[in-house]
Amino acid sequence: MPHPVGASSHGIGIGLGNGVSHATSESAHEASPLSSRPIILCLGFAVSMAGLAFGLPVIIIGLVILAGGVFGWAWDDYRGRFRLPEEEEGERWPFSKVPKDKLAMWTFLGSEAVLFGVLLGSYAFIRVNFPYWPTPGVLHDINFGTIDTLIVITSSLTAYLGLRSIKAGNRRGLIGWLGATLLLGIISLGIKGTEWYGLITNLVPGSPIGLPVSSYLVTTGIHGAHVLAGLLIMIYLMKRAATGGFSAEHYGSVENFNLYWSFVNCVWLVVFPLFYLL
Amino acid sequence: MNNTTPIAVWSYLVVATLLEWVLAKNFLSPTTIYTNIVIAALAASQILAVAMVFLRLKYEPRGIVGLAAASLFFAVLAVVLALGSIGH
Image 1 (cartoon, rainbow over the protein chains, first blue to last red):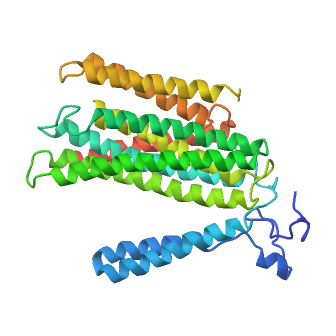
Image 2: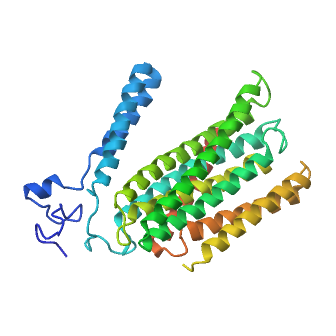
Image 3: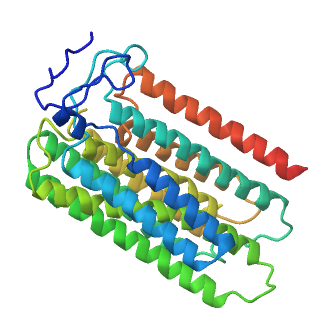
């Protein structure tokens, strides 16, 4: 059902892409949840990629634009710009009752599944067709991998407990559990960093294990970048929680972070046996 | 979701990981295909458990489950196409 202009209690723009008229008042226009930040972020990424061809200064410019996009986006969210009353219009089957931000997160995770699918599929192809592949335990320390996996799955639990805390209105609990998750994530990255250091320093140029090591570095590197992004998001969420940004009614960002973190951990549960055990 | 479910799932994940570790440490060799199969099955069960409970697929509306299934389909399609491309 179309909302009348200015009907929102927050005075924010309405009718996003649903054929409903937009708010016309000046205040509503200023608080519009339509954001150019994702476009700025993509532009920064594109410029930094172009920098691979044109040199370091272009990469730095791209990274500055990208950082501007990320922090601007986070700042807008921090100020509650994207907090909207859910609209009934456009929320028909099959996504009825699914908040838009959650739907966006699931769409993002879908694209991530394709990314990691291709990555791991390529790894499987290389491994099957490469004449020499080290047996488990030769290239990677199985004990290290197991400890890392235990840390990763424990971080899934702590992240979930944080979500449960805020659902119950316990903000301190959320901050505590997010802190525990952050710590576990840092330890996990530290373990991977130790392994990376060992592999890179011991690698002899022209060695037959070059390809197995490269495939490991690419896969765990991309996974590690996702973990690092998760850590930064956690810091942001903790700061926002500390200033009262979440409550038993408003915890969408925490829920979406939980989905992201669980997905990243799911990917690790594929990486661990493929690289360490099989 | 039951309050104890996440703890139970986490416990299963820990046990399965330790079991994988024991198998890899004691029974793994290039010729032991059965050990590989058991490890792969344990890993698949872990991924399923995380997807169902921590990703909450078990509790999400059908639309979200469909979206996840579509992602899986496209991931498999991308893998097949990528492998076909590499194979040439």
